[in-house]
Length: 118
Image (cartoon, rainbow, N blue to C red; front, side):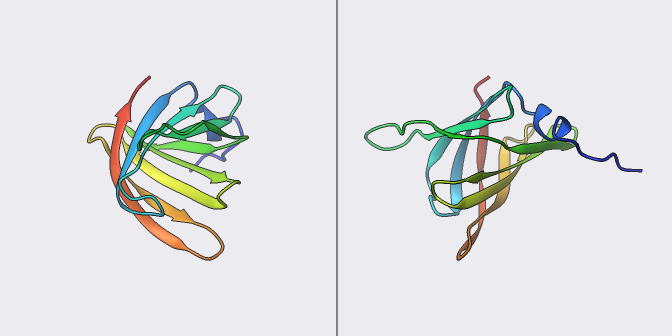
């Protein structure tokens, strides 16, 4: 029988990790690389790494994540400033990610690569 998710289990699987995502296809920013820091307090900070100038970190108060299989995690958060919800499944064994970015008007499948920074 599946276990019931709690706010603790929904954030603990990535807590303390820093990951880089390069979106190869789809989404509102194809070709872009973002660094994500999953904080101990359940918040996530992300920043764009491409272009002439690196982006300043944006902090969202909460994210949710679960380990869905060995070396496979799903994570989701709402970026309030852009209005996009990003849900990504990451395979740490293959270094691939797949997911969806959506807001109230648009929906995009996304795919790319995953790199573990910390």
